[in-house]
Image 1 (cartoon, rainbow, N blue to C red):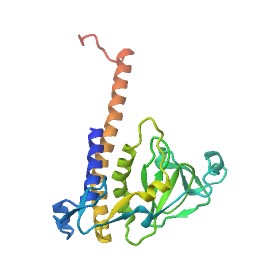
Image 2: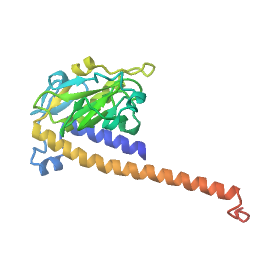
Image 3: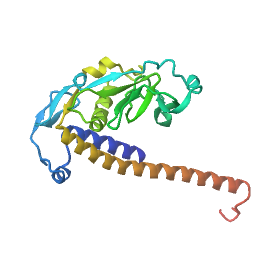
Image 4: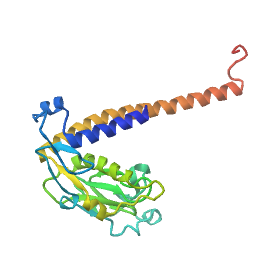
Length: 244
């Protein structure tokens, strides 16, 4: 069930960020429910609504790494603890390695995109807001164009990154470089439509995430019950003499 829910989430995102909202949702948002389509000429995108643009990531975003990334180890950060998170290429704790008393980036309310750059979880995306710093094996992707709405591209880049990850042989360690990112081509819907799509996906993905959380909690509870049942049976707390 968890695998199916994750597949459903990925399919929902991929379809919506390349084809636009489903007809009923588009109509409710005041958009054309069945827009004319065109070939984007980009392998991972396929056909897109005819009124959408398309360009290289390099014209829309700038990638940055932390100036002090090598210095910000877990051990060093423990000596300057504070309120500002330090993100790294780790994936536990939502990528937060430590919190310190200074920051390098201020992403504001619109935020920056964040990606891991090395290893099994390379190209894992997050949307970061506020003030933070970066340790190693990660980068932020900041908008440089007024054509982009960051939350939309948080979703839009996910199927692109998944496509690119699929091209890396399994025996090779994945590595994600800035120059790779800059060569990718993405769609550019009108900015108002980007906001509507991002809002729709926030809502729909939250529903799927709630189901995932409920399922994962049920698994934990069932495992706890299973272990308690075994323990009770083998220690004589349950009378099993009539079970046969």
